[in-house]
Image 1 (cartoon, rainbow, N blue to C red):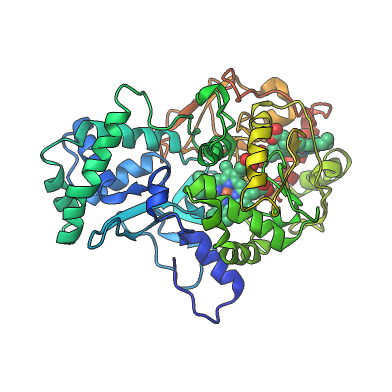
Image 2 (cartoon, rainbow, N blue to C red):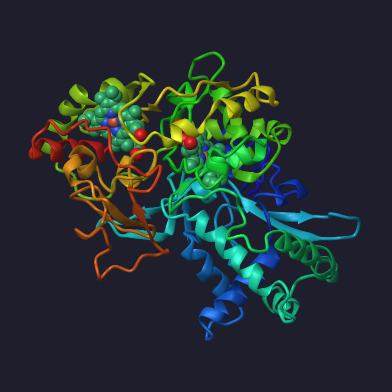
Length: 501
Ligand code: HEC
Ligand code: HEC
C-alpha cells in the first residue's frame, strides 16, 4: 500500500488503501480462488506470448504488453492518488496488489491479487475523445478490464508450460533478483501444486466454474456464490449476472449498494460508516478473502469512504454547448430527476441536491437481479456480515447517481447500450458492438463505433476489444425507454447536460 504519514488526513489514507491496499487478499486462502503466484504466472504468460510471436523478447516489457491487452493499466500519472504515491512498476499494473507469503517455514512465494484500483481506476480522455492510457483517474471505472480473457489466458498458458523444462530458466531471466528461497519455493511447492490443480482440471474448458465477465464488466455475484458455497445458476455457466464497473462518484448518497440495491444499510440511511462496512464485504468476491478477514479491513473501507465523499471524476474534456445544456437541465429536471436525483446548477458544476434512492423495474435485463437469490441472501445473513448488510433482493434495479456518466459507456447495469444517444432512443440500440480499449464519440456520447458496431478503421484500441452480443443471456438491451418521447433536438440537449455530471 502506498505509504502515508500517520498524521495524513483520513481521505488520503483512503486513497492509499484504494490504490494499493491488499485487504487480506495476499494469502494462501486467496490463492485457492482469486490470487495468483505472480512469478509463475508472469513466466508462463511470457512463454505463451513467444509461441504467438517468436520475436517477443523474454523481458518484462513483453509481460506488460500481454497484460495491457486485458485492459490492465500502467499509467505515468494517477489523478486522485495519495501524495507521494509511487507509480506502478514495470512488472505490475495499477491496482495489482502483491506481497510474499510463506506457506511453510523458510518458503517465500510472491502472490498477486486485484485491489480496488484494478477495477475502479479508469483512463482519462483527451479533448477529442481519444483515451489517454498514460493518465488514469482513481474512482473512474476501468471500462476495458477483461478478467474473463485474463483468467483464461493464465489457464491456457499454465496448461501449455507448467511441465516445460525451460520454465525455471525463464523465471530467472525475467526476475534476476529472485532469491534462492523463492526459486526453490517455486520449484518444490508452487509448481507441484499448480500441476496437481491442472490435473484436476484436465479436460475442463475453463478454470472457473462461472463466466468471468467482459471488458469493463465483472461477475461479482457468481464469484460471491463461489466463495460462500451457494449453488450457481445452471451449475455455473448460466450464472451470467455481469455488471459494468461503476464510477464511484456520489455513491455515498445511496442507502443501498449494488446495481440491484441488494445490500441495504441496517439503518436504511445513507450512513457513511454503514456503507463502508458493506464495502469491506466486497473484498470477499473480488479478492477471495473470508468474511471474517474482510471485517478486519473495515477501517480502510471507512477511510476510502472519507476519500470518496469528495471524489470527482475527470471533468468532461470536450466542448459544451451551454445553451443546449441549459435546455437539457430543464428536461432532466422534468423527466429524470425523480429517479436519478436533482441538481443545483448555475452554469458551473451541477451539485446533487436531492437523491431519492429510487429502485424498481424499468424493463431492463433481469438476469443480474435474479442472480442474487434467496440462498445467497441467507448465506450472507448467516455470515460475519449478517447484521451489517440487510439483503433485500428481487426489487429490480436502482437508479444510479449519474456522476461521470460521460466516461462510463457502455450503459445500463450490464453494459448493453453503447451510448447515451442509443439509451435515450431505443431504435438506435445496436444488437452487437465492440467494447474495450475504445475511444469516445462526443456526438452520441458513448463508444466511437461504425454503424456495424466496430471501431473506425483508423483507430487502434489500447486493449483487446470483445463483442457484446445483446442476444446472449443477461446482455439484453431492452427497457429504460425514458427520453424516447423527446425530439431528436431535445435528446441532444439532454446529453449536453448529462456531460456535466
Ligand atoms: C474485480 C473488480 C472490482 C474490484 C477489485 C473492486 N470492485 Fe467495487 N465494484 C465492481 C463492480 C463490477 C461493482 C458493481 C457491482 C454490482 O452492482 O453488482 C462495484 C461496486 C462498488 C461499489 C458500490 C457502488 C454502488 O453504488 O452500488 C463501491 C462503493 C465499490 N465497488 C468500492 C470498491 C472498493 C472500495 C474496492 C476495494 C476494496 C472495490 N470496489 C474493489 C468491481 C470491483
Ligand atoms: C422511473 C425511474 C427512472 C427514470 C424516470 C429515469 N431513469 Fe434512468 N435509470 C433508472 C434505473 C432503475 C436505471 C438502472 C437500470 C439498469 O441498469 O438496468 C437507470 C439507468 C440509467 C442510465 C445508465 C447509467 C449507467 O451508469 O449505466 C442512464 C444514463 C440514465 N438512467 C439516464 C436517464 C435519463 C437521462 C432519464 C430521463 C430522460 C432517466 N434516466 C429517467 C431509472 C430511471
